[in-house]
Image (cartoon, rainbow, N blue to C red):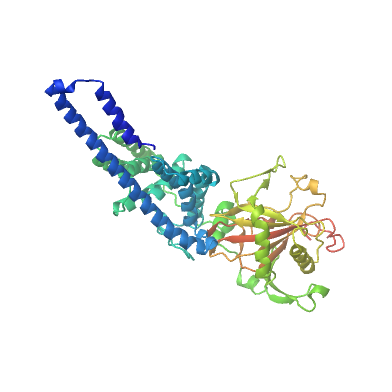
Length: 529
């Protein structure tokens, strides 16, 4: 039988006392024993209280997680479609379950710990937790969401509302702080403080939050506000090691600012810019929010929908497809009801075990590598994997009239929390002559993109140079040419996948190459033909 550590401590204490034998010969020494025993009883009671508290904590944790997992497993994809749920899952498995393990390990617990230790090998890492946190920050910027909206879970289209605790907000602030991102540090530390001020129960103390908050505000040059928070910090903790010295330093910096402001007053106000002059990043984010779309009523009136049989293609004669114009320059079309729910589920089923972090081709080295601006996982499927893939490829060939033998395999992609792919070209530019050299099939002449899920909020495909936005619609596909008939690249096709705000985005795409299209799409004579 193993004795708890506190019992071993008691025994060791008693053994040390027994070294001083003949206590009975001295009443004075015996009185010392009484005080020693009192101390031991106090320690024993502390141990009992600690064990009871530990069990109560574990019980509350189990009850909370039991309720949560029952709800989550009823619709896993829908639940994780909420970015806060995804972030908190990363945080729980990477951090909080580890804390629970440390708590339980204070005593022997048999199979649970061994099972948890084994399972933890497959848990998310610090990188996952940080990635999920940065995704929330990215969504906050792209869709102009305030911290309180995210923290309270009031996102558009949410199915499973989830609140963030003050500790969650503090964690986001710390991650921003570690990247020297003081703007977001301020936003999330302020939100954590707001929730604490409103009475939220937390082990987090206000002094720590205010310390981060005041420094983040100082780093952004707002000395007066930094001083206000520092004064509050000193009120809460007069002995804080940095409080008083920081206050003096901020006062000194404020005086310098005032003198500089007197010498040179900045009166310029930002004027509203024309869309064409706005930086690409800003255009991209505007389009993701549904703003800045450049489609005039006159141009809109020339966009139509129709039944399409691709010049009486035999496969489409009896069942022409529904074609809808999405944009005129570049010409982007959408095909409705072009892939069935059964086909979508089969494609997802085939792809899920093969999903890996999506990569990009380094424009200098040509080596495939991961990138922070492409947040998704992808898999490649061939007609040898399932007859359905061949059927899908044949359908694309019938609709586009383009040869599929030289096209790339069907790529299936799933965008996770805040998943995105920032502005890029699908085709190889002149400064990338070896982009697809190893394939031996020429450049990417066209892109076919299936939408295999609806997205509750976000996730549009946008074209920043022309102000176009195409929104996901399950069962549809969009198609555009990346190259003019002359073989020159169409730079207006530069596009991006907006971050998924709420929901789960599944797409699959087919990149069609030049080789084999000589008789299907004859060359043009002018550069832009």
